Amino acid sequence: MRRWWWWSSYCVGICSTSAVFMFLVLVSECSPPEDPIKCGSVSPNKYANCTITNSYGAFPDRSICRVAEVIYPTTEAEVMLAVAAATRGLRKMKVGTRFSHSIPKLACPEGEEGVVISTKYLNRTVKVDVEGMSISVEGGATLRQIIEDAATAGLALPHTPYWWGLTIGGLLSTGAHGSSLWGKGSSVHDYVVAVKMVSPGGSEDGYAKLRTILPDDQNHLNAAKVSLGVLGVITQVTLKLQPMFKRSITYLKRDDKDLGDEVLRFGKHYEFGDMTWYPSHRKVVYRIDTRVPSNTSGNGVYDFIPFRPTPSIGLALIRASEEEQESRRDAAAKCSSGNLITSTLSLLAYGLTNNGITFLKYPVIGYNNRLQSSGSCLDSLNDLRITTCPWDPSIKGEFFHQTAISIELTMVKSFIEDVQRLAELEPMAFCGLELYNGILMRYVRASTAYLGKQQDGVDFDFTYYRSRDPMSPRLFEDVIEEVEQMAVFKYGGIPHWGKNRNVAFHQVFHKYRDREKFLKIMKEYDPHGLFSNEWTDQILGVEGTVIIYKDGCALEGLCICSQHNHCAPSKGYFCRAGRIYKDARVCSYLQSPNHS
Ligand SMILES: Cc1cc2nc3c(=O)[nH]c(=O)nc-3n(C[C@H](O)[C@H](O)[C@H](O)COP(=O)(O)OP(=O)(O)OC[C@H]3O[C@@H](n4cnc5c(N)ncnc54)[C@H](O)[C@@H]3O)c2cc1C
Ligand SMILES: *[C@@H]1O[C@H](CO)[C@@H](O)[C@H](O)[C@H]1NC(C)=O
Ligand SMILES: *[C@@H]1O[C@H](CO)[C@@H](O)[C@H](O)[C@H]1NC(C)=O
Ligand SMILES: *[C@@H]1O[C@H](CO)[C@@H](O)[C@H](O)[C@H]1NC(C)=O
Image 1 (cartoon, rainbow, N blue to C red):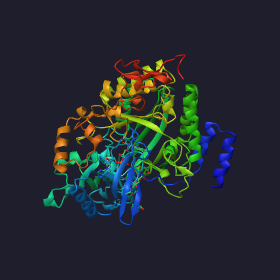
Image 2: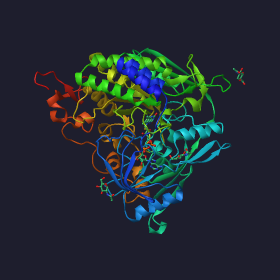
Image 3: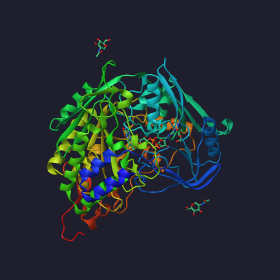
Image 4: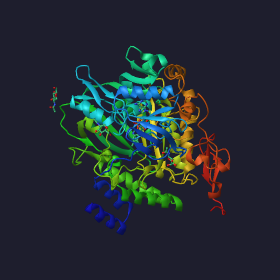
């Protein structure tokens, strides 16, 4: 507390972004993220009149999801009761998780009379099978817990997302991954051996059916491994593990001239490699990350700085400064702030330490479980929100769009070169991404899951400013929109199910070879579509379209502009063709004496 006051008055005095940022890194006290579920009426056994949102507090269309009732089962039997009750009443339902990290409106039961079945208390580790090298957990177990419990038994889940706060049910449902081109690749669902789920049943089953899907039933497993939550409630998952191993990590910054050629070579060479790309500064940071013999000495830890508890006041200052830069259209200021952030991160080794305390030198060597994923901002010490996760909606901190698209390996080079050409035409256009640490590039492999990746590829993650005002355009939004449309349409990229804006999902179902097999199983498990909502119907091609036309729709990625009013003509943003990809339609700022 005292330290916080000291720093904040210091900050008001000096208040350069770097002071704020250093200060962000120094303090470590945290309150747990806000609950995405809020109920207006709570009686001992009933949570009624509720809303559910995501961890950012806003869906892509900014709609509010109202739910008649939320149920918190603690056992599989209670899940059966909840599903049976809703099925009998033909009520729409969805699974809700402790933190609700997906951006799209996946967790919202359709209509306002629906039921959310929360996995908050379905988070036990059921069994660690040391001989068979596997772990079985309940559907709401978090990634952090799975990694820790496996490690306690000397085992490792080799590939995971980089963020602890996801639940196994949620991360499988959206196809979440880490980075690897080796073996089965980096998607957690490709390490699934068995799934138990509760789906709606007929009267003969008592309206709920427990399904145990084992390895001998690959057809059902391929549907259940990545299911968008539309098949039922995943109550238990068994994952294949490996003996614990060590990794060696070195970050290496280089210019990005030959990135298009390097990408393939790099991915083949290093089992866990990834890249962070800063196109405006023409730099790439290669994460050279590979398995080493387990007797190699080293006790390294990764506690990624942007996932650490961060002082809310600093976050508010950084946000205010970005809003100010946006309103002044000060691209140069964005570039210098961006540079400051990325060089500070680099100086601090992104949160790597050689021994859990300090960073001395590369390589950082340590056990997989201490390097693969992090999220100390989840830790709960107080409720005052002195520090939070940076995107916590209860403070005035980060608010962003996220575009995450996987591009087939053979096309990655041309995509990168197109982005480089755009960066040449508009050198400052990508600085806005650098404020969120650039473009994260990770390897993914083709999956047997029907809704998994279709091809080996590279997943590109772009994080960028989102205004609190949906009608307010962004600096260089045309360039990022062009990249988004190139990735999705020119290169046929596949959007991450748990991220992205609507545009990225336009006609996405055509990109899945086995969509029909998935839909068949969906019909079998949930004939009345009780676990489906408008959004899943749209992305699965069952009914409707993700594109929403209205004034300003392109600013929020709800549409591709075809008329000026889809942009912000009164603010000088008009619908124009792309610079490199001529089929793109983007909101461009046109100097005009009359704009306000
Ligand atoms: C800080 C941060 C870092 C991230 N890092 C990565 C990363 O490194 N790699 C990556 O791929 N992704 C990453 N993501 C995205 C993330 O993978 C997805 O948002 C993830 O799927 C969300 O998991 P969740 O547990 O929050 O599920 P939710 O978002 O709550 O749920 C997702 C969907 O799954 C359904 N669902 C959840 N549990 C069950 C269940 N038990 N049974 C049936 N359906 C269920 C829900 O109903 C919903 O439809 C990150 C997100 C954040 C916020
Ligand atoms: C539900 O919430 C709304 C708005 O908060 C309120 O007006 C209404 O009375 C509530 N209904 C019940 C049944 O609690
Ligand atoms: C399960 O979740 C509850 C509620 O969030 C929490 O108190 C408990 O510690 C969790 N259990 C495990 C094993 O993480
Ligand atoms: C690790 O083990 C291997 C084989 O068991 C041995 O050859 C090597 O010298 C050991 N290395 C270290 C650093 O102890």
